[in-house]
Image (cartoon, rainbow, N blue to C red; front, side):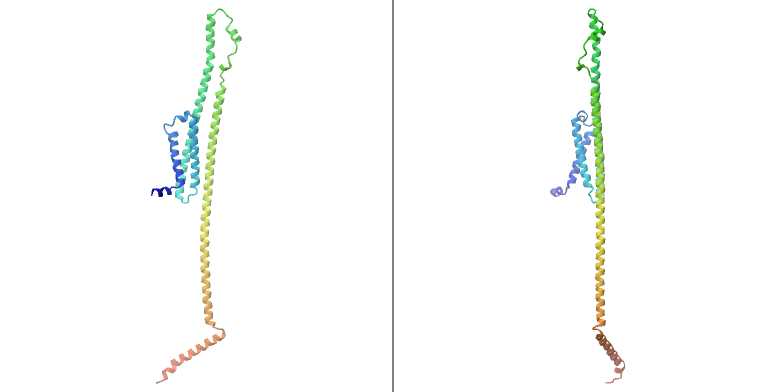
Length: 279
């Protein structure tokens, strides 16, 4: 019995079970009240989760293609409703991953700005130390002249504020482009699935019409055959009657008339002559 039950399982059922389990794990990992903290801290974890979401979308497209070929209307509607719910869940997962990547990019940008501020505050403290040391030493040239004649600070101490900003802007732009590309792919997949469903419905309707037309033609042909057989039988009976009435031409008609005359004579004799005879 177990082997027979295992044989009854269709490949589409296996794909549906795998998709349901995968979406359940992803929903618990991303959309739960306490999501996995690694998703916000690790870009590798987000990339791996995004790959799982893409795999779930691939399984969903496969199930949508298979559901368009279901002949039973109730099962087809139930399957399409379930697939629409799963598509909405995949869209929510994609948006949540996008928001997490945006939060991570914002944190990186804030850290970079903080480092720039700290890097710029260091040169501001050095003039105060220079002023104290100059007050303890013998009279020296003015501080302004010393600053003017002192060599410029090393290039390593100059922190550019535009570097991290440009990198964060580039990362933000790439994230937006990736999100727009994902949305475009989702819309394209939906359009393809709708077109496939329309084509499948048109093919099913054409097949139904062809089947109905074929049945009507077969019934009409059978009716014509019955009518032809009836007409042939009627023609045969009419020919038999003609042959019975006509016999062998005029000679047959003359013999028929003679038989009729003889029958009339016998009838008259029986009626009028026989009562007068006495034995």
